[in-house]
Image (cartoon, rainbow, N blue to C red; front, side, top):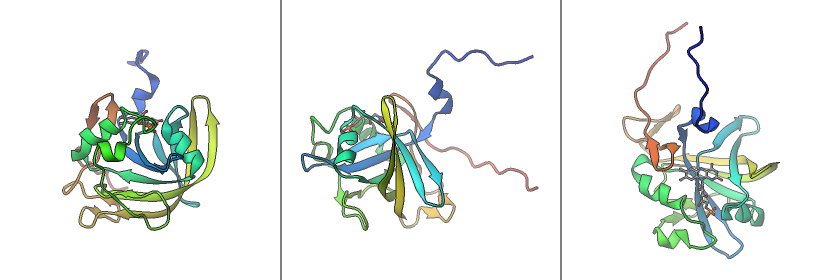
Length: 185
Ligand SMILES: Cc1cc2nc3c(=O)[nH]c(=O)nc-3n(C[C@H](O)[C@H](O)[C@H](O)COP(=O)(O)O)c2cc1C
């Protein structure tokens, strides 16, 4: 007999918590904008691509139409307040970079800058924009991937040294917990 019951919350919470990135873009008003996004995923290794679902009402959406490049910044878990705050206001009304004192540094291959406090960044350009109702699913081609010295291995983050933000809902985030290894086959 099944133990499953209907989930009355929003369906997507069954797919949370999700790694949160901050998308940095260049906007029509000449400003740099920053928006957290947890609906993101790698798509393919060849070509190297990452998809991010961007609400059509967000300023970031306008910014990506204005300039089809972005940096996909991975913030460390201790920046939770800043990351949440960046998702509560629109860059259309507020210059988030100066309001939150974001430190930016030039990127190597794209015009949008990199968040200097991020532990990782993927520099990317829009390859495809898929229209899906209220969002555009931007498929980005990865141009370059960088990670902070000392906090990663070739398999990703070294969680003894750093942590990332997994967004659950609203103000609630998790950090990555214990390592579990599957039995060798
Ligand atoms: C942790 C977190 C994750 C979010 N994930 C997404 C997302 O994946 N896609 C999206 O369109 N908005 C997402 N949002 C909402 C946007 O960040 C929010 O609407 C933001 O204010 C848009 O900024 P902008 O108008 O300057 O682009 C998220 C917000 C938070 C706090």
